[in-house]
Image (cartoon, rainbow, N blue to C red; front, side, top):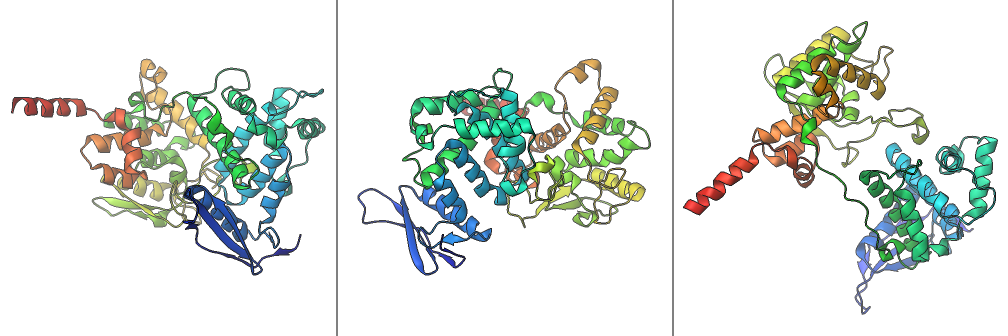
Length: 454
């Protein structure tokens, strides 16, 4: 391959000379112009984004074809298995750790279904483990496989269907049927099916971008996934009195002040509606905590927890930007005097880490989700009746965030203000918390009655 790093990109433009709308992507490698035409602007911009990401990663571009090394690898793939591995090599460098995990999870479900009937097929669990822990990780990050895993990967390489076979509707339906089931044969949840189908759709769109498939075969299949539930269950939402009782109960959990160290962490989820990843990353320099009145948090970092095999640092809490926002975005969150007082007392008692982190494990590390979840479950038993413990009420620490947002909305705070504080878009906010708006039906009924009797 005659390669070069001298790459220049141009704006996508609409080809007005064609009878049907089309959009042209233009770029040049070592002075040689290349272009590709797509029927929609979205497809064209998606392809241009992939090219830009490849250049940003420092990939060499082939002068003749104009394509980066990762795309040439994908175009040379003849089987579904090889193409998927090339797709992961392309996505990995600029994907978040949780995204990498999600892609691997979905494709390890689909790939075993897209195989030929060959002798020596490993059992389902071995195939999935081999894909998750070895095959669906870039070669330079792949651990040494066990003999059993190596045999499973060799079988997948030999039995994988040709990429062209995906043009057949019956083949694509095999993949869809596979992602609708768990490993034990039971039906998967609606949200899991939706998430895995989205990954499969993205892989097939990439094949269309590279002109390995004429169109996305998913669009030809009359297959409807089960409806997903996006709204928050109002049964999980605690009222202010219950929230205070839970926070008090947390301080009585565990030895050596284990629960006391975590009470302020849960308070941030309730009073400021922080996500767990945002809470564990909170630093003293992010907090304005006056002696009296309202304070403010400046949230700009999240440290969500994920298996270390998906992170670049090898840390289970890799630092990243805020959810659905740019890396340098900051979200200001006003906090009530109650939380200001709790945070001031926490810092006075436990101090902060060398990097300013407010919440730390006893050894100074990032607080693990297993640690604070265990404390939370014990606190529920102390604060609630047996019937409430058995109910969905505040079953997870994350439900404190739901309680906070529901409280703000029901208190009459405007949706744009609530969305800004919680880090949502307004439309997502109103859709997700629609069932938690208490008393709105009574207000609507009165307004309709007033209009009828006017």
